[in-house]
Length: 314
Length: 177
Image (cartoon, rainbow over all chains, first blue to last red; front, side, top):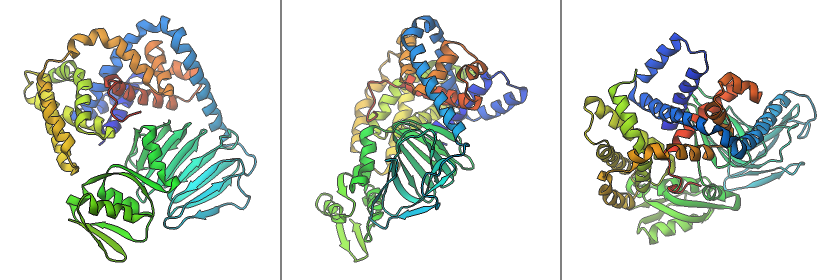
């Protein structure tokens, strides 16, 4: 199990112990959980910092004016707005997209498409993407059946914007974000604003996460992880919007897989040693020869064009 | 419930995390893996200490960290030039006595404050209410007027994040924002 998932569980135990309803059976379950060293360590580590944080109490009076009351007030207002939005979800109202539900958009290999909506929101589709627009009461609903799309959404509390993909839901709270839906995982990258990500799966520990700028959430059937990435990196990953892929210490195997998403002619890396070489730079998604040239000239590898495939080996 | 090993671990090993993260970052550039690598080091250290508590926590932790990194580099099949060079170079500094222990108490409050300031706002809000204002979960729910489940979730994520930012040196962010 990933350490951050473990941390979430350990933190849940801490919260449970403090909620005033701790029972003997909870205690027994908790002790059983603690029996495993990795669990115990995660718990010891979090509870150590958490108990230290009690010292902050000493600062309460001075900090209230300078920092706490102001910022927390703003945050409370935002949380209240968020809650209001959740209440709005059930309300009846206007249809948003055309009344004929499910307008379908699809892009082929190497294609991109931009959809501009009546309210100025934009949806950009990457290669091999199938997406359907529909509405349900006041809700604006996008079903991302497969592929990758970038969303720049005008927030409207009365018309929540929801992306459904692979059983997961992303509820926009005024946002620029990207969703990539692969066979067994869904990745949500948040650039601006915030959004709520509700993952569905059998063993998902963070079922319902609020994403903030820089968050990249990956949900599989078994787990959901959120990592934070620097903005430059996120923008590089969104290079496809301008027809480029940006590699930074990317394994040749991963780079080839990325190219293969856009091109009929497939790159095949024949040798695990070659697959592990790392490359960097900006490439046009459809210019496969940029990569093969680099493989030949810089790495001194053998590049063999077999028509349907290009084989790269030692 | 707290064993001798737990006590040793909290007292001697956890304060090393800031140095440990620095060490791991210089040998492994994928920031997303750092917490996992830390955990791998901790599990190995804890298990060894369950058999016999090492004489020097610091020397032992960094020896384990070197192995964990070397192992990860081997498995990842990346071109390991940078990682190997750094390991050699850092190997020398790993045994020097660290300033952590002495500075801990003095810096604790400042470090906690800084960590709190770096938490995302939603999580910080409930952490502050719980720890600075000393409100109970029920009181926080009443004050914010949001569901207990949401408060619990923010608190959960806040607790987990607080430990990470507390142990992180903000000047050593590698390729983080």
